[in-house]
Image 1 (tube, rainbow, N blue to C red):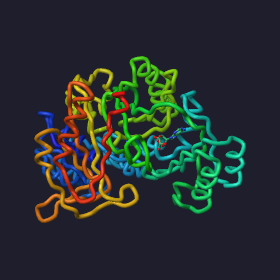
Image 2: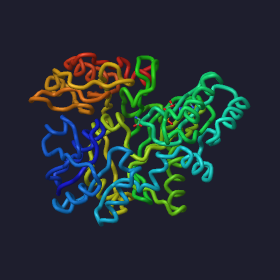
Image 3: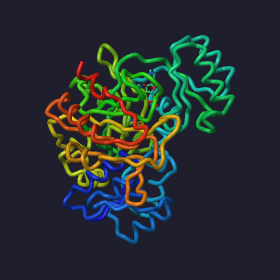
Image 4: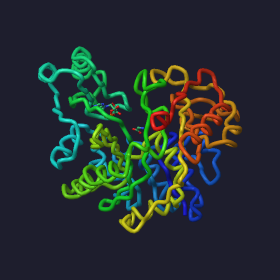
Length: 421
Ligand code: AMP
Ligand code: GLY
């Protein structure tokens, strides 16, 4: 069968690569894809973007089903449009994707269903928001309500920073419409982990656990980014934390959405904050797979991903199971100079083939220029290593990273260290 995968990042390279490993799959079209998906066996880039063009393509090519990588097309209703055209697609509808596209929607939903998360209030009025911060004190967290590509959250250590963030979002309009309302919530202490599951509307199939590294620099310093590296599994998610995350967060979310007539289908990502007593709280929901979590997680998946998606589309996830390699995986993101403020374009990347002989290089912001692979974005590559334990996976990842170079390349040296301590 032929499949369509929508998106162009490292997550999409990893999902398409895994889908293509299915013996049932002949071709995975990636729209629009990147220089990595252009080179991969059984993958083919497709320079289409509009929902209508993609729908026409799926009809013409008899695509068995589509899978959506990023949040933007989901929030724009691509699943609704495909379903209206009678085409199978794996992802949430626009209404269900509000779990990610509106922080206020997600917080109110969690409050209705008793799902553990930080206490909050939502504001459109700056004066009321300032009063709330003055009453609450710092540290406190200010979040733009809408999608802001990872830039909409300010963890304010002082009241001053909180007031500033409120003014930037509500008065200065820094985030545009996404910041027309802000969620202000209590600061949660603990360690973060990514808990990602597949949902068919009713049943849940958990993916392997992982941990992202959001800050730019070693030791979790510097600005927040889209994610500088991830590893799987995450030992912080002990069997007890896993059980609690499923029972207290994931299942109530899936059942609650269904009860409200807003069924969730697709990948559901709960960002967890695990406190010192091992209690998981929901920091955020994403309505898609994580990037860069996908790259190490897919590197560990032994099951046929296309088969799992098919089971989900048939509402049979309760009969499916996912097999994971016992090995650990570490993924290191190589970013361009100036990231996350700016992103590079056109710098020639060397050493990808050599790195691929050691680990697996997933492309994100890359393009092809006169036969050479060049940078084309902030996060350029994610290099994954596997090993019998996390330390061995880390060694393999960094041996592969050492083969790659491009002008201004920056990366963290400490991916996985939190779990090694
Ligand atoms: P979000 O986009 O909501 O995941 O927020 C981005 C990052 O900000 C998270 O990964 C956390 O590191 C941090 N963060 C968000 N909300 C809180 C909170 N209530 N308490 C502490 N840190 C938070
Ligand atoms: N790695 C975090 C995210 O995908 O949102």
